[in-house]
Image (cartoon, rainbow, N blue to C red; front, side, top):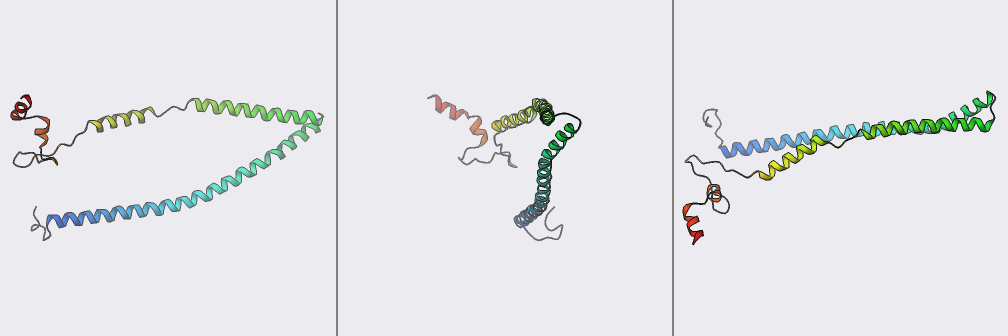
Length: 167
């Protein structure tokens, strides 16, 4: 439909410029919104991280207290103090070995992202083979490239060009 049909007297160039400006403004607004949301989420994450660090520090400092309590509890059962601490130490070593074996099993199952790598290689292969294909004009001709030649003349040489090359 032409500009007269919808009551707008702007040219196609003006309409395109207006659409481009509006799209640019929309993109800028979307970026500003994303920045604001990320800033808010970053603040929440910072406070959450601080709370996690505090909890880990308290748990870390409570382990020696638990160790002393366990050792003195074993002494109260009739063992000597040295054997009590040695048993608590052995329990921690056993716990560390079990956690290490569990972690090793989990890390062993980690594999490289094969599907993503394959997809990236396929995309790279397609993009390497891609060549620009100019559209045909209404009269059936191909628009000239920067060098002045058309895509068809570059790909398929004409009879005159091959005759000149043979001489």
